Image (tube, rainbow, N blue to C red):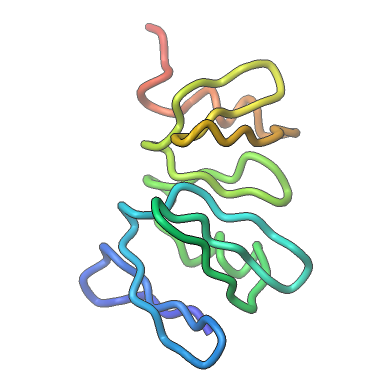
Length: 112
């Protein structure tokens, strides 16, 4: 299971038979597939058994945003927001659904 580390800058992720320490700064986004979540990091992908709802409760809301029922994105990794797409570092394009209004509130995309 997914555990929050005391330092609040990383998580311990169970992937297969291993416990893997993942820094929040390494995470680009997470993608749900049933009862599994794929963590897309800068240099690799990790698969862990948990639901996206369980994961969203454990991540810090000031660093991550759920942009679709299947995706949670690191706010500081968003390069561009289009009509129904989010561009993440590395040119990954994610589909955005009903959370578009919430996504527009991402700090570095606000226009005052």
